[in-house]
Length: 428
Image (cartoon, rainbow, N blue to C red):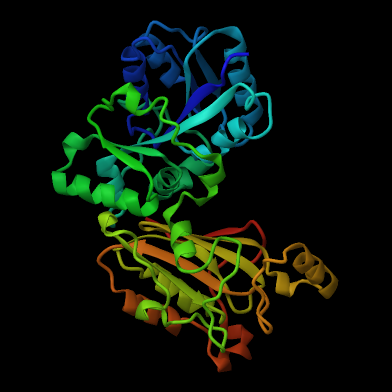
């Protein structure tokens, strides 16, 4: 039986340069036979047509196309069928899967790593994200970059995504989530940026995904050997790639595990390095981070005000907050100017006693406070050139007071309370 086929998963927002990269790789492949699978959510598969025009392959011989759906949701079965068909019908040395302009690479990677007929044929080699570097920087500068691909294909060949979430989803969210799940990030269109701006982009990437390798490119020109047969992907680490998760772990808490940074009053211990447990990434990244933990709930209105006024230097924040008069775990996700909140189910401590005890018995590692149970706030902030002490003070001032506990009518704010509901706290 032949060896498994290495897979390079390619992500990037509309117009970043994915199609240009694919054409370049097919042209410069040399002795390496490459198969390409293109996913496109538009009505016309512009990418597949352009790739076919720029190579000796055609859509029926090495380029498979998926239409009218997203790889990470309803097209999962189609993707599985397509890659199995490719492996059964022809011999090739490597597969490139280009996910749509609005999808993250993780669901695609999991298809190749779970126990399935796909995983028996393939192995993920590398996760690659292509960035329009200027657009990436603008997304964190307080400006509102124009979304590419609206209504028709742009000059790079990426067609518009007709799904409603494409119009609603901030560009900064998309780029951050793709970078956070990358082994290699191409800082494309480097000719449109100064050396200082490229250095800044590398620092931002390093903060979002500390292990990512960055490559500066123009017109997506990169040697194929830098993207193929690198063996950079480790399926056991995919959930821990994002920098905000590293920051949580470095501050004394592994995701889903124990936390020992509490004093006798149940608040976060502010003794570590004199900064409440904050940790700085390696100096090479040029970006600092800190973790804010409390066992006291926020006033939802005041917390919303703090989040809306986050310093421009905070490029990423993520975590769970405890809100007064709200029994849902609310997850905050901030990327540049975009901040969203999602309710992800009730705190275990709020459940009926029998159900609560069952959950606790099944999760012996769960950190449990005698008074508050699992209710807590854990927020990671990553950025540069911002006043950490001032931000900590603002967050502390947003916590409920003893008097407010008894005045539920004053505890109002914009956060969701029902599982699955999402609220935009700040939009670009």
